[in-house]
Every structure is written in C-alpha cells, then in structure tokens.
Amino acid sequence: MLVLIEWLRTGEPPELSLLPLYASRQERDFHRTLRSRRKLNDEEFYDAFYAGSGIPRHLPGALRKMLDDALGIDFGALEPSDNLLNANEEVDWADVFWGIEKEFQIVIPPERQEAFDGTFDALLQCIVSGRASEGK
Image (cartoon, rainbow, N blue to C red):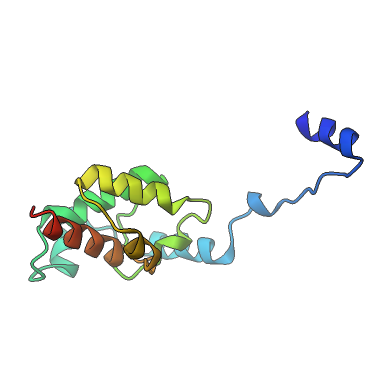
C-alpha cells in the first residue's frame, strides 16, 4: 500500500525485483555442501578440528549453537574454513558480532570485526583472543 501511495505521490513507479526471493549461487552451494557432509556432534567437531589447539573444548560447540540460533541454520556439518558469509547473505554481521559479545562476555574490537574473513575459525579466534584479553 505504501509503495502505491509513494508511486502516486512521486509519479515514479517502484523498482520491483524478485532477486531477494532467490538465494545466490554461493548461498545455494554453501547449503548443498552442508547437506552433503556428515554431521558431527560437538565432541566429534572438536576432536576433528581443534584437538590439541589449546582452545577450550566447549567454545567451538557453543559458537556453533549460537550461530545455529542466530542464522537459523543447522551447522552440524560445518567445517572451520567454511565461509559463513555465504550461509545467509541477508544477515547483518554487526548483529552477529553483538550476539557473540553478549553470549561470550567479550569485546571484539571494530578492527577485528572489519578484518573478519567470513570463516567459522575466524569467529572462534575472535572469541579466544577476546577471552584472553579479558583474562578469562
């Protein structure tokens, strides 16, 4: 209704596009890759990717759970090098960083947020460095 009123007011027809209704190729490929992999529980995920890393055992699982909730995607088959920016291109990552800061009680400096490469591992390293600087 507002679009129609604005059209009548300005005389400019609205720009209509179906693009937001369709996922990009990268997003479709990301989800296809997740579906094709075996899902790992938190223990298996830690043992496969972070054993011996010095990262507390609960952190990778807690981050996956937080991302599951924030993005509405099952990350059971996620790998640390997966580009989360392709998981849902409509996500405001500022909100995700804010959620991570609240969930893990840390501060992620803006320069660290700007340097985010999109991977799960980069997010996990933000948490680890944030916890180290906070003395946790």
